[in-house]
Length: 296
Length: 296
Image (spheres, rainbow over the protein chains, first blue to last red):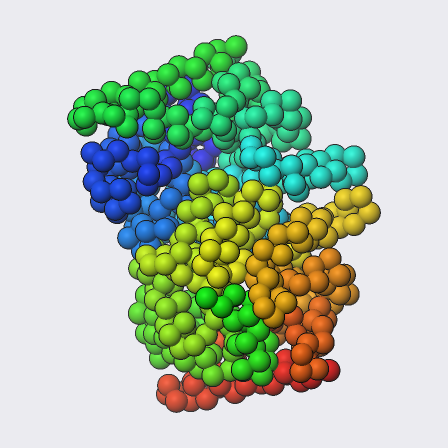
């Protein structure tokens, strides 16, 4: 089994850009071409149509479970299906579930997200650190055993991140303490590439902090959300990356969701072909921008 | 619509004890009477059998989603079914999902947990505060509209709670800052009873802190986990409660899972009747202990 970190880095190199396509199927934004607004058919059709396009431009697909669960068991099933479809299309799948619990409950979530069928068998899952180290351990254990990854929320890109994550503890913000808490754990998921599959989620809206975070977590791959629709540019997004083997910046993936799922022209598309062209053009642009930012 | 806080307090008064039965269907612990270990049938049968017994002794049922999701879409469906069964049996349902996200994703989770079918339509849901106020807002908004509750993790009962929650920010632990963050929001879910449906999750293993938390959050109902199997006694568990209308301590519910789901004698029961007797005896004991602790 190839370590998750190595698979992710390999996928980024193969695609030429650290591009992670977010799969956020927002009911109101899905074009009528895919079915009635809010229907499970529209959700399924939209996801099934996005995945092969994402596979052409993105290294990673990040399905956002919060957009599937409102549809109940059928929605949960649609998410499971999307993960399998994406992996079959060659994408690395990072399940954005933001789980966080303790003991046997955490083991349950870990098995659900990273374990084999009937689990998601995703390559990596996002988790919340508030409950502490023992809430991370069950995910880490399963990740070690199954060559998976775990992405811990460190400093998110929303305004509310200031409320707790930026509070100062002994001269440094809490998010820095979160980074220090997971730093020793990162060793356990290091691959042959030197990178660790214990990822840190670090918003793209604050490049300086990304550099500070890189110091605290030299080997952790970063998952950088907030690029595109949330306003940060490509250069800011890769601020925590470092020069890799081929002279390019590497060290994680940058996620864009709305900008590539609902780009200009897509909502008005009269045919699937027109819609596909709009999506491809947006995805190609994101991949190109990120590739340029990493070229140095 | 009766406010969630009033419904919870009413249920506690009706049952005579602030007892919340945790529904943690651990595959290895479910007796063979219900089917093959690890099968969905065993999960469903066990939950369906527990619910009517819980309805006799507990005011609240707290299904732990992490034990359902490893079964995939069928497991998610089983959780949906359990919530409906419990509500039909007269229980207030507090869905232990520990969700936490932002923007439209948080809205999705809120709709999934607190919204009507195909959502869970649960009475209350647990959420994680690490992402800040804007991650709480979508849950709060839906709770206001639909007379539901929201239970925010403040200070959990696991050893790892020390890692971040106890870090000192300006002279007080982080969990205290979390409490201060949600305090102004509590007003929005206050019922006629005076209590607020913005609940605080506060572990039973640290009674002194519970009293400090009550100062910070005078109107918030507490969800106290960690009672029973996790070692805390009934008096400690209600340390954050205050004298209510009838002279009894009130101000939340205390949760017990393993001690009432897998009590001595239940695993070896040869018949469903024997199993039921073991469960009822454990639930009655928990309810009795908590009632006594609240009698003052």
